[in-house]
Image (cartoon, rainbow, N blue to C red; front, side, top):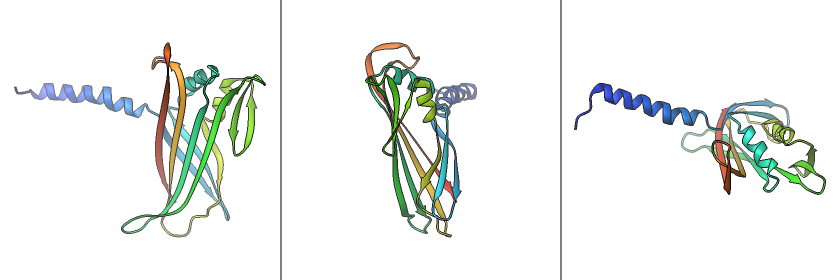
Length: 178
């Protein structure tokens, strides 16, 4: 069975619209802004297609926490294999505290409270001025940032109620060359 050029082109266009556009609409790191100081690096991270509404609805269910994990790795560019110079993990946990009737963000051993779930989710929708205690050497270094988001929801893909609870894991990573 032979396909005409028109049929092949039509299939490729359908493939592009249904598959590749779905990938581009997924959570990703839009930009990393590092500010290099004498003893540390301040890093700000902004996302593209952050699932704000899904996280607000998951937090409103008041059952399961939302866990966000960052993994910062600084590598030195080498000829054969890049060398890991520094690694740091950072995590955030959003949950509902029923005793205080507040939404809480736990990070670095501190707990911040919010009255509305929208405010709590907005506080984690980007990472602002996170301090890494590492100064890049004057060699070819780069930062690799891995981002993981996990939450449980009783909503389907179109944000309608479902009887089963699903745990979702979103991952993305990006490199920044100094």
